[in-house]
Length: 638
Image (tube, rainbow, N blue to C red; front, side, top):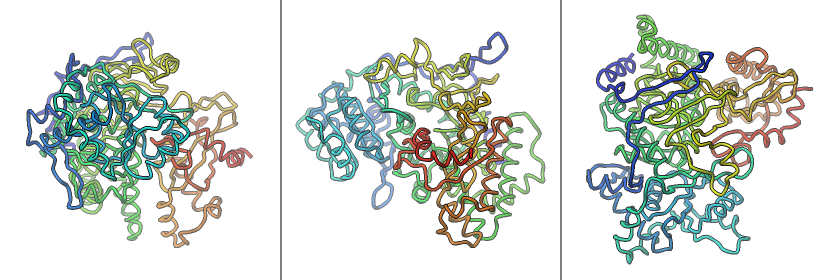
């Protein structure tokens, strides 16, 4: 009951009601069609996000704003030191030829230098163009050509080779520096002859409407489109979020807020997180991997107080705890601990929200026992101090959310796109609502049109697709951005995402089916890895299912079978199919009988970025998977 009681105490001390108001509007049939949330910060009339490091240095020069990973551990970086490094690198960028409004591409995993370079580009009056470190030569070439970028900073020699391979046929090649080859030191060194006043003038010349970054979306079809985001867009997102969340996080934990950033900084969610933390002087560290095995030791050493992740992380933490218990012969005990956590989470949440009585003594005693045996280990896997987490990218299974709530960690969901500068909605910090993606972020609005499509309005909405006016006109009106997602609003203005318009399947019987609801629930159950629901023009709905390698190895080991058993020998295995069927049954609970999965096929291999079946944001490329597994799909309907 600790987390619920902490929330109740925080609700008394941190009153957001007078500052955050949600206004909902109904249509003629009484359905909620629009929700608007008041802004917590004023729209800036001057300045840019390039000012943030220098404002911090002037107001709190000794405040620790970052912690940098070194061979000897985590090294504190003060506001004054970070501003000095930004200024030196910005002067270097001017020296190597970055003009005002010029662009610098950044291709690297998440690390301290990424953040440093981002702010330096802005301080020099430039625009950053992030590139995913997993991008192919063709994708890199497209982004560099489309954006007209002539300066490129990559992490290592492999990235440099990818850039060279992509642009080898071009008549003019970009200049490339490698972070791991002292590239940033080389750039900074060339700036010693550039007066500090040059950077100061460029930075002060920037205004809210100037372009800050061009973020290329990892679409499931066609070339990525460059989303033009201004300094006003970034400010509206980051400043409102930090004002909304930071007071509550500090009040509940009674600790200086800190986070370990492991999301790719090429993705807008990671970028806005770093901005919000810099604005709030929230201490940030960096980890280059989201792989739980690589991330866990970094979490243990950094010990963040909150995290921002994706469902995959929370699914793996849960699955690892279950697998550990089963290896020790305590699988039944973990299953009970899991049920108790979900039960105490649901009952405790209802009590906190005033929807039910306080959980009974029996449930509380059971939760206390399993806190000693299981739940504290779950918290330890996230560093030991995490009380809050934010999940984005795709829906988090509601039951999994309640499990973590029962373990003492509140996971808030959010929803957004690159075009909305990351989060367009977020669950309010004192009003958790598992199963929804929250209310509009302060200053934003959500509307559901007649077709059920989610529209977004407000200062967070991007201004255009770079060099693509036709695509811009398709989605961006005078007031609203059409997301392409389907959703509903409730009476309190909370949004629930129900699917993606272009992914909707129409069976031969004329039934519309949104596959994402089924897929999200399937992926939450081991040993399933990735999956894809099919059924367009077919008699019924079916699914292709891959098996997560570690989970499959564990499944085989527990049953004392060879862990190198090939998938081809397991596709028709009765015991494995029975376990997968349980996951299918769980997914089917969320839909009607006509939308339910009637058949599934376990397929060999994985859906990954490397083989082109996933986007960098882990969305399934349905056309690629469909083409490569055409025979498996035919098997489903034979």
